[in-house]
Length: 176
Ligand code: NI
Image (cartoon, rainbow, N blue to C red; front, side, top):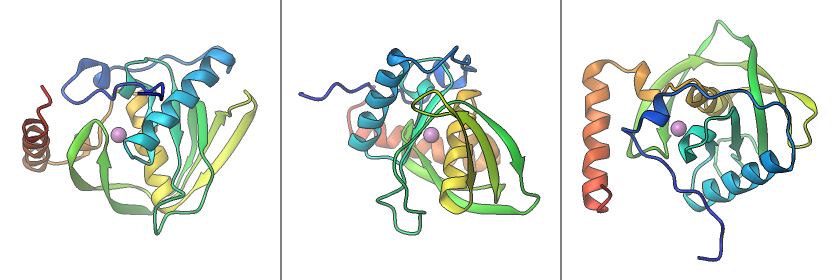
């Protein structure tokens, strides 16, 4: 292995249910974490990854939808301390998956449009307005920082179906 990647934490692990703490600033240590998270996300592959998922409890996330059809074309997005500053009344339903719950997905309803304030890779204040897949993605990743998973929005019946699929996936891939 030449790449310096994190291990992705799978459910059930308490770190995925824990609220992460804000960072003081975006310094070289945080930038290194962001780079390593992005490389880990690309390798998985996935379109978003939050710090909890690599066992770090700070409010950092990375996203890149560029390879996904139907997603807005974008470059990697790095966020520290993201805050929701607007959410639309209008909802959107999309199929979501999660690198911490491999082998399963489910429809999740969220606000269709959100605006997020955050610190970017250089530590500057930035804003993102997101619709479509990017909106679902940024809300999903911000949820991780509060210890929330997409299955928390499902009925217990659907949640159990997803968790059974994850168990099956783990067994098939010899993941303990
Ligand atoms: Ni996720």
